[in-house]
Image 1: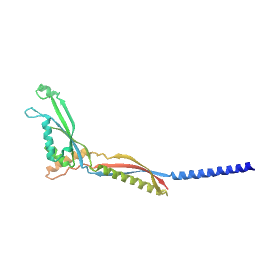
Image 2: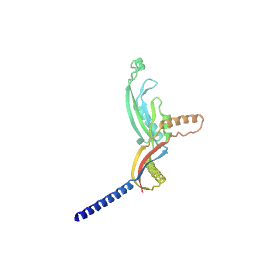
Image 3: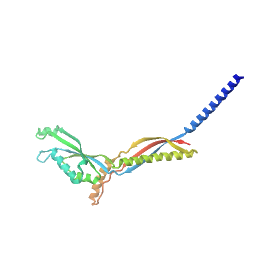
Image 4: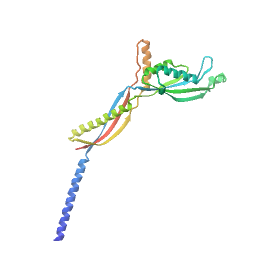
Length: 245
């Protein structure tokens, strides 16, 4: 009799454990229901930090005398100061030299300087008009080339945070209406992940030179024009997962 009783108690205990485990498993399955989505946001801003690189080189004057790099540097930095560019916004990007070895040099039988130096400056301005003033006032003989190295915004970090926040809000909004479309209710967030980061200016060189060309055309028509840079596009994607109640 005791054996039968012990067997019955053991059977009931096993059944209770199975029911408990089954209930716990069902609870886990329910709690594991989730929805995962990706939201995006973007913003376009006008750059207020413009970085321009000017490369200057030694050259021969009308008397076939080399105008040395020190004189060229002094003239250029004086021009920048007169335009209103602070010393802290001017830096040396490159310093180089090359030995002349071409057909023209060979014909002259080394009667001209063999070594010509060049220097590149990186200039940061907050308005394209200052760049126009430098280009207009620079010594054409000393100018080798100039180009935009990059554009940015002085408040870029704040703008990036704003775009990321909007992207995350877009993720939640998408998850909410998708969940409701199948009769579910959105719960708490269980995962937030940044998917993509891109705040790089695009096609700004074309924007600047296009503006210069437009400005020249307008000057011919005796009408004022203000050069304008293309806007910087800031875009982010945020992935988020939410529990379903």
